[in-house]
Image (tube, rainbow, N blue to C red; front, side):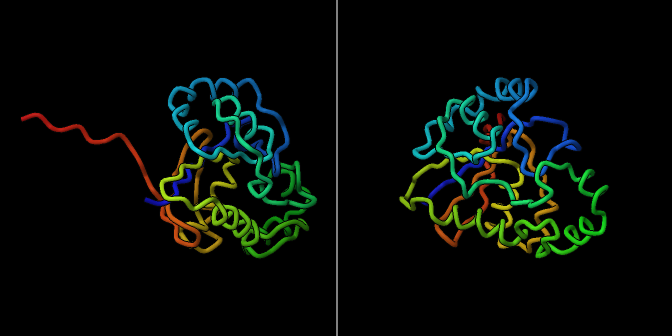
Length: 197
């Protein structure tokens, strides 16, 4: 068996168009309602030997609300967006349209003065590679959707631009399995029921 890491996307705190870079807002009432509706299905993940979360307020609140009592991991923080921190994409575009275009076109660019997309992906991948590698160990990590996208790009060894094509919905889960440097994506579902003749 290999190490299994299940990522849980933090509950939302606002509609997607009003999401902010490095959002430090707490979980709102709609987010709490999401957590309550999903708690029954996600509670079994609390049995993981190791439980973590990003330092973002909504990730911590989601983990606590699901009964995980997660340990905060700074390496699971959102991408450092420099002077765009706290802005929506629309606000950044209104202030610096050419810089936003450059950032979206070239994953290595940092017109905001923060972290490049490859550096962000590498940081999240480095965290993944340093988890205890005991066979069969189960890990759960509650994180922002952006962090989960970065982890998936790392696991799949995909080009950094792939980051923009991955949609991670609030309270969705994805599991990766393997060992440092050798990860695979694991899609799990309800076992097929035997057919009756």
